[in-house]
Amino acid sequence: MKRFWPLLLVLPLVACHAETTEGTTSSSGGDVTVSTTVDINGKVTRSALAFTAFALRTPAGGQTTAAAYVTVANKGDSADRLVSVSCTCASGAMFHTTTHINGMVGMAVANGFALPAGQTLVFAPGGNHIMLTGLTVAPKEGDYENIVLTFAKAGPVTLRMPVRDAPLSDDSAGAMSGMKM
Image 1 (tube, one colour):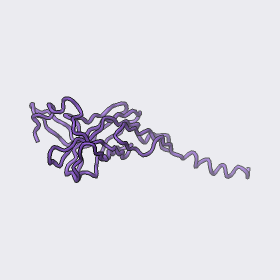
Image 2 (cartoon, helix red, strand yellow):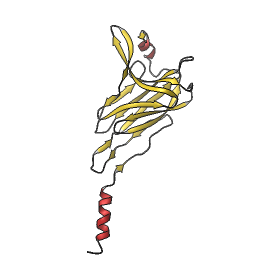
Image 3 (cartoon, one colour):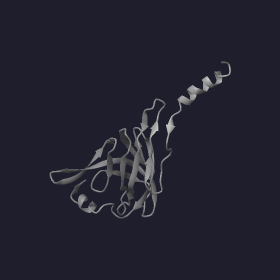
Image 4 (cartoon, rainbow, N blue to C red):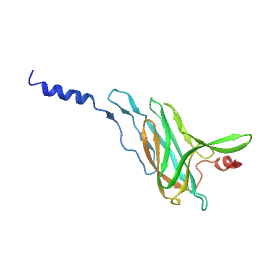
């Protein structure tokens, strides 16, 4: 029995190991995936998230605001919540959702977004979007800016977003006409 006592001390340490299938997440403008992490009790602590179609729009001539877009798919079996956004290129960052009231289009500040398992959250022109205010730099076509999305379970995810002049969808101009600011 004396020969096995060191093994008995090591076994509990091995059993407490948390499994992580993927670490830091960032990109050079391509698709990004955050894989599932399981805690020592076998409980999923991070959702399996996939990020596609992300870009930051160049600000209109001299403006200090810009919009960013992304599609986030929760491919895991556990819900998550997008709780905040930040960017070093701006003094403020928030989620906006487009509203339609009495034929008028407006914007409302959203306090995060639920992301149920198996669902997709879309940020696109004319819909939900990320609004950057007080730009400290003027992003231009061809640049990249790091946007950090923070999730309740997945934690912070940094996306290296390409800056684009062109709209990300065909209906963006029509969706924004009549906007009340």
